[in-house]
Image (cartoon, rainbow, N blue to C red; front, top):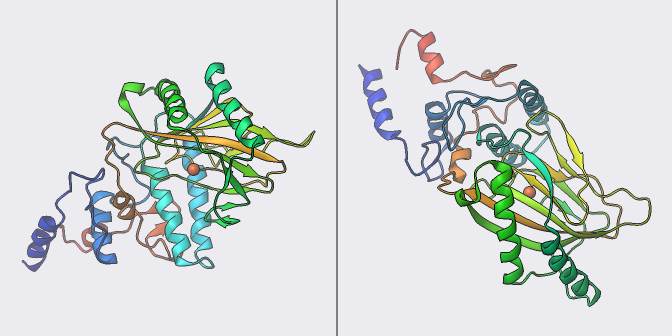
Length: 325
Ligand SMILES: [Fe+2]
């Protein structure tokens, strides 16, 4: 009787929220037990079996699954030595990587900026660079970035030109169509200077979904390789390292595809514009991922973990005890 009563109270309290992609509250959990309750209700276990925001069953390539399993196993081993806040951030990223919808086969692609658009932006950058019309951007170390950066600000007209060009191209690359995308951010021209690094990461899950890095200009000593963009790993389950010369574009599903430039740049500079879009109606919010992190994320010896993921939960426990909730 008491169990039934608790079950009823819990069911009322855990009414799905239609304003979030997975149905969890918009508000942050008040405590870990509230977070756990929602995790079991929405996800049931780890890894996720449902995409968000579409709620379609996850169908992924075995090589990609294996790649992610290996990275998560390494993360759990690392939990012995890393700080809790670092582990938590990593697990929030894991929720994005595993659960967010995918749109393309590989998660990334290469293309060329139409010559007329590239010429306008490239000329503007070269003039500004020569006249030293740039501002230093941030400290030597900021979050995931190390090294000096300089910003050549784009005019509104330049931003619109780039955005209007890329919305068509990304609409085609993703298969969604430009009419179903909305721009969320156009940023640059950021020049990374010699010895820069950028740790691999995923972008903001609310806004940075289908994205492009457009290389405006770069400069390297003779014979030195370009600073590559790295996808770790792509949806085919491979680690990809690819150079993006001036005039070229790197497309990426930036909330799901782990990306960055972890190698040290050995050049004078590499200048880029970052352009982000999301599908219209996108309702994924931060708490979708907060409630998606599996219990035991900070304890590699947690009994819920085995080689297939994290499956132990209150439901399994009660069924085991012969009590259905
Ligand atoms: Fe990024």
